[in-house]
Amino acid sequence: MLRTQTCGELRANHDGQTVILAGWVDTYRDHGGTVFIDLRDRYGKTQVVFASEGGDDILAASRSLRSEDVIAVTGTVTRRPEGTVNPKLPTGEIEVRVRKIEVFNKCQQPPFLPTQIDLPGEDLRLKYRYLDLRRPAMQQTLITRGRIIKAMRDYFADHDFLDVETPILGRSTPEGARDYLVPSRVHRGKFFALPQSPQLYKQILMIAGYDRYVQVARCFRDEDLRADRQPEFTQLDVEMSFVKADDVIEMVDGLVARLAKQFLGIDVTLPLPRMTYDESMRRFGHDAPDLRYGMELVDCTDLAKQTDFRVFRSVADEGGFVRGINALGAAEKYSRKDIDLLTEYTKQDFGAKGLAWFKVESDGQLSSPIAKNFSDETKQAIAQRMKAKPGDFLLFVADAWEVTCKALNGLRRRLAAELQLYQPGDMHFSWVVDFPMFDFDPEEKRWVAMHHPFTAPLDQDLAKLQTEPGQVRAQAYDLIINGSEAGGGTIRLHDATVQQQVFELLGMDETSARERFGFLLDALRFGAPPHGGIALGIDRVVMLFTGQDNIRDCIAFPKTQKAADMMTEAPGQVELRQLRELGIRVLKPDESA
Image 1 (cartoon, one colour):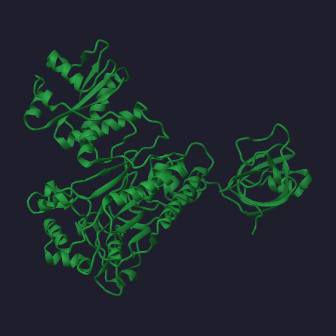
Image 2 (image 1 turned 90 degrees about the horizontal axis):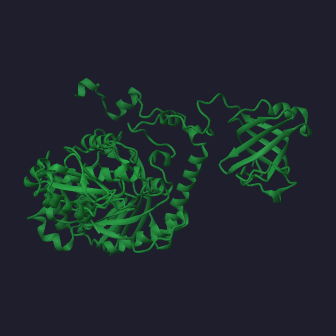
Image 3 (image 1 turned 60 degrees about the vertical axis):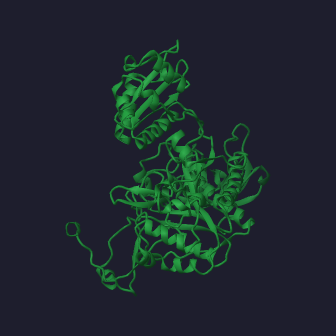
């Protein structure tokens, strides 16, 4: 080894020892006859001192050093003089008096320094990712990520799960997000697909009798991106045989409790709370509600029918909904200008027609430009329904059910952040269960799977498959952390006949179903056990556990929102020879239009 210790290892008990440290020059301070350098590696920092006692050539060499140079120093560990101890550093009691230096590599002027306080733009950070990854915050995040993954693996190993790898090159089964396709040179004109998840393979493993499977799996989806989504991502994939939904949920409950205790110091009460999808949409307007605060949605549609306010009355009479939220004590915190911004937010981001509001005065009366359109009795009824008290701020959206859900959920989250209704370290874990099994696509005029086409319906809803598919609930469950879906799973269909019924409902006749999933349909006829599982998004779990809001900061080499790697400049063009070997001709944009 080129070093005897790391830069975060030395303490006062090492006083007098000769050591070799290697790392990057973090800071440089020349005090005339003495040069002080903080030497950094991923383990920490150590102050190293170049003085005349080490020799004039050593002191001269130190004066040529600059930030991010890579060096090794040999010297003696000594206690820092009284009054110079740095309590902010674990190594702050000592320093290394240098007798020898070796410069491995000089750093040219970097576009930014990993130690600078003000971060550069994300594009620059991604372009020079190797510099960005030197930042202590990034290093700590990736260290935590590695520890979380190890803890996950240890937990499932303790519960007798087998870690099995599944193929990266598989068959394209276009259902859901777009596949990333890989052309086959050997089988010209045919393509592999990168896995969107190991879903089919883990079901095959259950049919093969492996009972309990786990994998840290790489997955790929060619879909539009946002701050918490990537084209390639990592998930903890789990499958179990001879289980019901409660069994899978209970297993993950234990994992959450272990992770929360180990990484957050939180004792989580089990079982984690659950609510149905219908309850979640009714109370919070979203299927991944943030339960760190209240501000629940309240339905006032019946009261809207009693008012002369045309916006409320017409929506309610035409079958729409009038729903609102109560921002407790926030009346004086929002000016008319602020309210105009909130109104524009609901219109632009969620397609709402507008935003109505009331402020609750000290005498309990509701004040607003629209208040004159409401009788005293109706205003009193609204205040009572909203549990309004003096100083509260009431906001309403009148529209279709879906619009009220989206707009009020967005408002609820925005107001909670602006009003600081939760602390940065607050964590809340819960489940949402019993999702609809199908959603109707108005453009394609057909039913689509809410989760995936291998999901089993609730036993009591099985008879509705043929008659009322929109009323069928799935044996599906999502783990929710702070208003984000951290994982989702289902109990699978293990009956080939019911599986074919679902395929037909989704618009796949027996021929097309067999073409796409023939191997699974065959396997289901050879003794398939009841089985189910879940996939947890590791990138998102790390983001939530480290208190960040951008998933790219939790991945070593992420893609941009345009699915590009700015460091390697991928995707890029390939040689014409490669395309010929694959039998591929690339069309220009105008040719493919």
